[in-house]
Image 1 (cartoon, chains in turn cyan, purple):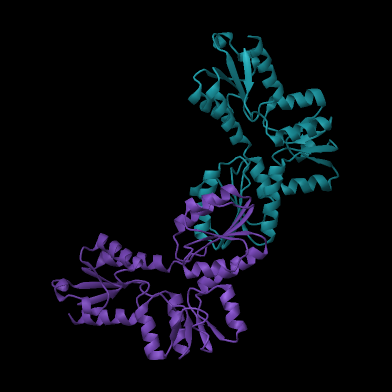
Image 2: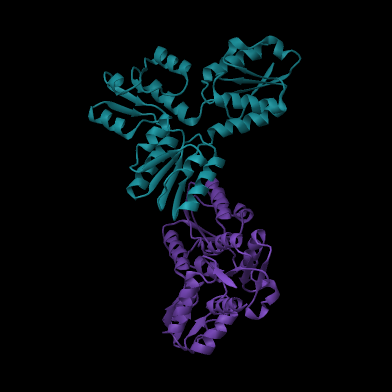
Length: 273
Length: 273
């Protein structure tokens, strides 16, 4: 079976960078899950001795503390540094950016609006850098906010630009000045564009990722629009040889939280069919 | 006939202020039409000796030059001052605001987008205060612009907020930072809201204004939705007594370019019916 990988698939730049940092810092502890992928976290523990601490207390005993890709709050970071931990920052640079913006805009007297999910660690971290911060998840929520005259707006990196624009438009209608920072990262959408293109030219499409992962399911949905033989598998063990009968070209893509070594396993097995 | 005026009608704050400035400066000359209303300009000439010059040459002979409500370009203002004219500024403060914003944002290195009609004197004036300025009249036009990473956006004062928000949303999707200043003045829309309310409670509705004025026709259209006996007149001479037969309460409103003395004439005549 001939195989073709999507132009963009799997881990984004920030996640790949964080994994490299973890591999380079054997026996360190991560403050919170480094990334949202349990199998990869297990691998880092097994092969590199990198363990996981869920809170300030749990990371206390280890000198070297890795800050996860989604970042942590300003307060927690300060405590780590005061306590003398060696802080190794694996925060994605696309997350550091809105953190810095919120800090600066807050210092300049802007009310801060963060578009995102208030329970997401990235959003909690970003919001912690300002004084006068509201988190909103929708246009309905922004309509409930008491807006001031000068507002700065940032977005959680994984949000969609259309909704961000709608929230910005509402703020603009209610304020004198809206300072809007487009902090959306396109990695997720690049994976989607790539699967759309690839699924047009293949006979069968395999999507590798968690069955509960929303971005993986989204990839499957897009693929099914163009290739009726599209399947979602968590790893190579779920591949069924009968799917591939009479097919020539198999496309492969993977969700944003799927490690390369799982994808590689799938690819090797398909090539043997 | 009992009469009730709309809560908001006729001249806006900036126009009223400019007329007061002209009345206070007898025998001055205005650089461009002070406001967009020929009858009022005639009255200022007849009663206060305030004449009209269309360009730099025509205003040269008069010491006292009144800058009209819509403002003039930065270059023209500098020439007037260099030449020693006494410049009396009747620019609406709501227009001075975007002029200052464009100047400041341009100095701070932002690309400037002005949402407005490129032939309108207000827009020409506002745009003249920046170095790196594009004027766009629609979402289609902004989509043709080569946008830079840092963009500041202002609006012509009479534009609608919905379109402004759409243009802002497009800019946000294409840039790192969009600094959006809501420089829309609500006077026109306040007149529209007021006629909507008034036309619900009256037996007959009279709209005073130019038959060619787009904002006056808009008022008529709104009134007709709620009061079938709605009429547009340019002045008291066009009122027909038969319209008022069997009616008890007459509502009156006026377009944004209709002077109070014309409205007053209409009101007095209706009260005599």
